[in-house]
Image (cartoon, rainbow, N blue to C red; front, side, top):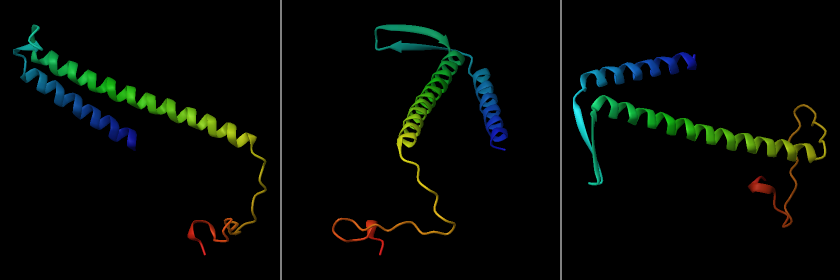
Length: 109
C-alpha cells in the first residue's frame, strides 16, 4: 500500500515540475557572487535544483542506512559473545534485582 502511495506522490511531483518547467521557459541570468554571470532557461535552473535536492535526500538516506547496518552488525557481534540465557516460562515477570543501595531499579516498587 505504501509503495502505491509513494509512486502516486512521485508521479504528482513529476507532473507538477513538468508543467512548472513548461510554463517557465524564459531565459534567466544567474550571478555567482558578482564574479561571473550565466544565462540559462529557468527550466534548467528548476531541474538542477530538483536533482540536487533528490541527490541530497538519497545521500542522507544512504548514510543513515550504512550507520544502521553498522550498528546492527555490532549488536549481533555483542549478542553472539554473551552467554545464552534460558527463556523464562510463559507469563514469568522480569527479575527485580535491587540496586546496591537496596532500592528497586528505575523506581519499580
